[in-house]
Image (cartoon, rainbow, N blue to C red; front, top):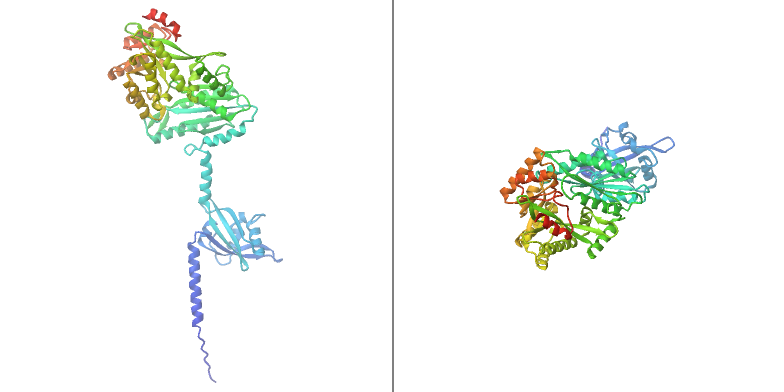
Length: 569
């Protein structure tokens, strides 16, 4: 009996096993911290050798989370791909067909899919390659990228605050409607009164709530959009004109209700401009018509509705034709200046005249200033129109008695830049009228977006000795702010406050308050729209300095001035 000891040096083998273990550990760590999911699949075959499923042989932590897999326990049934991802396995484009093709052909397959991770839908890109007798698949989570892309696509055509379409989205919706035989209509809604008293958060809340009210009124098939900071549009197809008008009136009623905001209740002033096309809509022309109507609605104060239709300009078929007519009228001096007398309440004698533009169209007769003045503003003709009216008014006034002044209306657009002071200086020099006898009447100057520039222009005019008056005082939220910002010397009380001043206690109280405010600020006062002797007497009793209205005379052509001078002295 004996024993033989055989010693084999396995140091190298142990070292190799150690290196392999460390390599596997590094691989495992790398896989566990990888932002990409990684799985290794082994095929499961039926008796005929066809692949019927895959077993998840390995899955790192990211794959387990990304694909919603249960942790694998050995080779139990839970590791089958059909149980882990049943919705993605079957069908012609399913994982079973995809991974089987990779296994059999050695091709590389790259796909995008969705999966649930318990916190909502996710998107991922998979890349599958053959690995020995199985398939290795990596998964990249592209959820954030796809959501960002979807958000960018949404914001490209939608407003972030309200969720409505934006101007670009509205244009895209209008394009396919131009061939509709049943016509279309567009309502432009402009909000005012919510950016003065409170801060930005309340203003945005007011806009958001206004948007919900517009959407509530939105008929089936209509398209709503927010096309500006405070401007909305409602596009309708195939609606009768009567329905469009009823909808417009309903929107004004809905938006008139006070809006609750974090800082208090906000009362919106709403202007609505409507354009209707009876068939064969031209999107650009329809929008321009609606903008013209909105510009008309913005004249004056309070909630207003204006509708542009083929008859609005008394026979002008399109905005382009109306613009061409107005250009021709300016060239041929068809714009006339008429004058309404202004009466001093203390003496009941003439204090001056207000100059009012009138357009005598050769085919359509007189065209209302409410139609052609907004058109001039929209088309850039307002400077030329204003210059013609100013020079004619100064020329006519130079022939009047020296104590009479002439008041000329100025569009807010004319206050942009410093051209107006030069035009005024040229008009005075060319006609010989003294500056003290010219008064410029301003309206809604705070909505220019450049109050500092407007104040500078007005200061230049005041330095020339020209008088400045604020029109429609007391009708809007901005009146007091305008008194503080601009160097006016007179306020013209809005005609809506004058109506019933002799019979309504509230109206008389408001007039009395305005008189006290004007006296404290050293401002002269003129009441517009005085139509009855009782209104005149009450205004005089409250201390209003001047009055004008149909009680004395409507606007008259220059040829009537001598008779007005004889009548009122």
